[in-house]
Image (cartoon, rainbow, N blue to C red; front, top):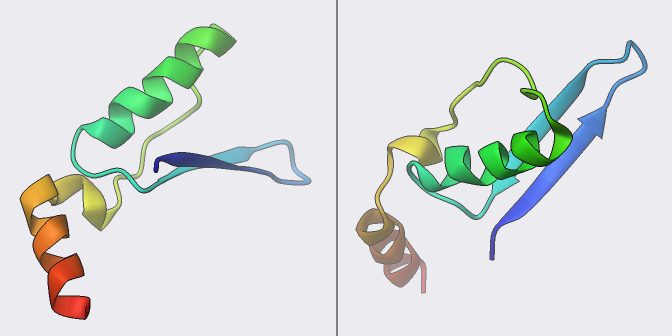
Length: 65
């Protein structure tokens, strides 16, 4: 399940993190939020999960069992 974690800092900046998404899916998920807010969230920092594919994630889960 995909989740968005939003951190609001005391200096007024924010951090938006997508949890449970891989590849382009995380960017699409935050774009939906940006569209609803009517403005970009800020600069993007892509996590290692962005470069994974669904197949790689499924394989990792199977190995962990």
